[in-house]
Amino acid sequence: MNSAPENATGTLPRRLVHRWPTVAAVAVVIATFVDGVPPLAMLAALLAIMPVCYLLFGAFRGELRDLRILALQLAGLVGLAAVAALALALGETVGLHVVAAGWLAHGVWDIAHHRTGRVVPRAWSEWCAVVDVGGALAILALL
Image 1: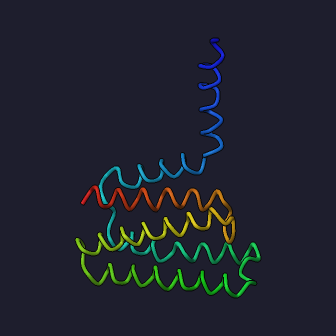
Image 2: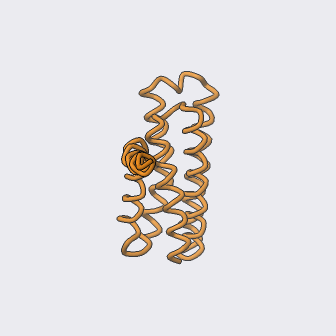
């Protein structure tokens, strides 16, 4: 009868090991936002760079040979770069709200990639989704 608590306790470390991208991402979010919101320019630059990483992963993995996937990835790049540019054009306060919305949108993009298992490794899309959604929420909470 004492085995149930042991099994419950024993599974937690295994779950954490299995979800290492999430654990690592939470650590990144905490480290990034512990001292407050980073500069808008940095957050906007990261938003524009995120889809470039997906293009690089997709190219190395051979996923971009399908022109539909390539077109979708390029559309994501253009869309998120446009959000980043808009955030910079609007100034600090409104811009941070816009960049947070962009980070949240990229988090949804990550979840879609995680579900399909395409373009990027699943560990990457899991990590990135947690960083993006956690970062967006941190930006909004700290404003």
